[in-house]
Length: 101
Image (cartoon, rainbow, N blue to C red; front, side, top):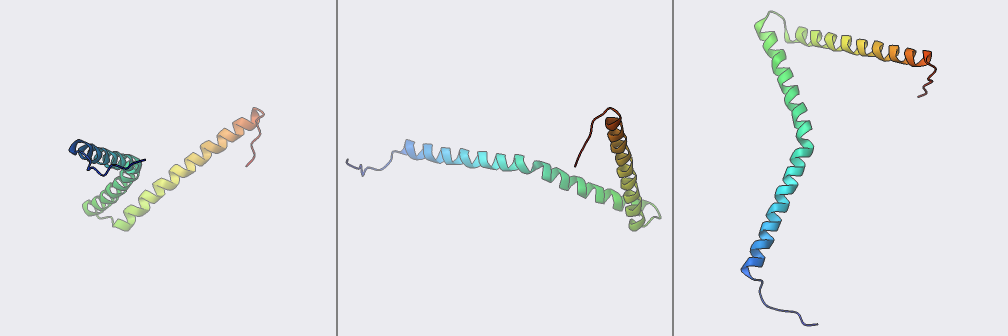
């Protein structure tokens, strides 16, 4: 088997470069798509913090008090969710479904 020592044509070189470019672009798109939800959460977190500071500036409440109010709201939502889950399990038990964890 003989190996060819000739140089690749310009079309082959251009094609290889184009293929590498498209592969890099595809990888970037995949990475961007896979982390987009993380970036969205980061942006939401920042906007929440900005909103917290804005509320504190516009009122006589301190940032600490605003944080406490938001935390209390979160606790109420969690308690409400817990009640809903408990009610759901009681309903399932009444219907004869057993659950184990």
